[in-house]
Image (cartoon, rainbow, N blue to C red; front, top):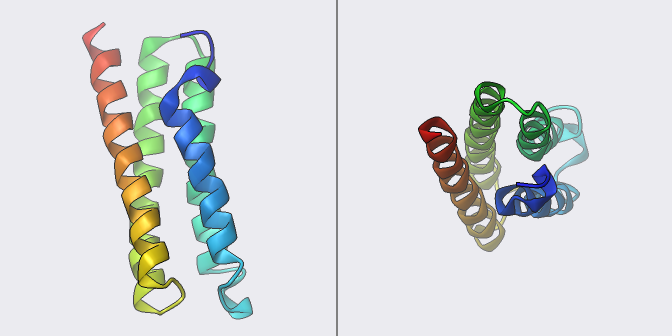
Length: 118
């Protein structure tokens, strides 16, 4: 691996950040400092922790940061469910974002496994 930017999971998580930011623009203004803020914080945490962990150049630290990233992705899944149930996200957007998040979770899990096997 050259840098974190070479990791497909990092690239896909950056795309997810953009998708979530665009989706939350349609949320009610009274959610700006609540659900909107929480979703933006956890979705940006996914690629940020992948990058920070990769930048540490230690497999142990990389693994720790991947676990944090995995937790943030799981947190995002929860906020997506809440947003859909509150009708802030239509079903199509919800399904798209949930599928992308699930794919990223699988990718992080696979990367964790490969880091631990080294």
